[in-house]
Image 1 (spheres, rainbow, N blue to C red):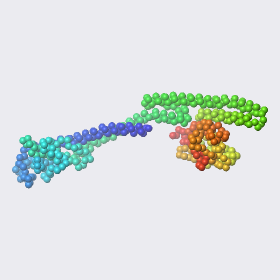
Image 2: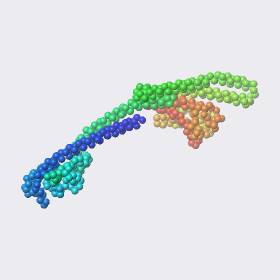
Image 3: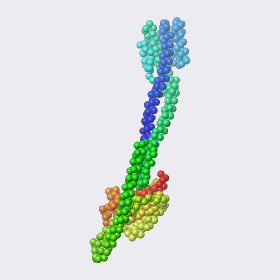
Image 4: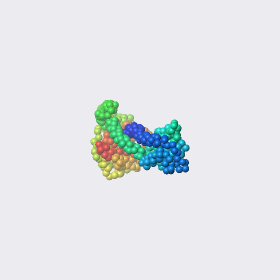
Length: 476
């Protein structure tokens, strides 16, 4: 979110800077070109004033010969001025009659172009107007030239046109030099904008980041997490305070629920024990093979197991995890050894596989209890002659304990429900249990940052995956 918001702010600021910078760059280029055009207009006006009094028309066969200059001193002066002008500035200049024949030109062989800006400027001057506002020349227009023309008026009539054709190299260099400070200023402003956007984004999103972390902590069972509403916009500070109030209320409700379950489980055990005792006394007065009394006794014992599991679930959800750096592979091997007699008695091959030593962070007691519940379930549903495998392996920054059995497995719908409280598959109702064992395991594991998931084991059976962190809880 920070990256997206920062990208939006930088894009907006860059658009504003470019919207200001491009017109300013265009105005710098226009000012440079305007200065050149005004200078050329002054030059053409001066040449027009000299050509106004030239009355001798050079012969068409040799318009630039010394003989023609000797006939008219004014024409000779015009020739000299144009030649010095071209030599000094490198600008082609000439005075041309209406029929495009030259009165004087420098260089002497220069002619009016048939098309382009020079031809357009000449045509404009023939109607008595000076050149103005030629097309803008940009620094990358290497072949462009600027043509400026002024009419030579005698007795109210345009008798000739003064035309200058200027190279644009120096002007383009000046435009670039004028753009350099502008580009530096734009870059500096952009850096300042990025820094301000980064600070603004951090200031706005810091409460959101803290709020997200607290929400994640609460979702994973750390109900004591709260948000310090000390920074950011007022709206986010109010949201942080509301979040803390909501978390307090949720924690209170959960504590009341856990206390009720624990108290109810504890309080029901006494009358249940008394009831089972009376059933045993009543059974003494009935025949030993009475099916009804045996059924009542079995249901009473089942109710006692449910109460025990309810109390265990309430304690599991309430007790904080005692995380330690633990050899997960060694702990799993110990639990496999503890359950092997049960597996041997049922004719199931129980074995541990994988790495000999894999370290991870876990509550050893909670992990042992969870493994006991998972292995117990696997042995219950695995028929004789099949196997149950406990595999420990590292997976990036996690340690995975996989318990795979060769039982009947579960359907896709059943996989989505396994682990819910009191849920048991309709196909396995005849197997002893309360439906709370995996729920207790999930609560024990969640307190330490571990997870438990379920998948199919091909070709048949169930895979239970317990994932534990390899890094310390505060290292991330």
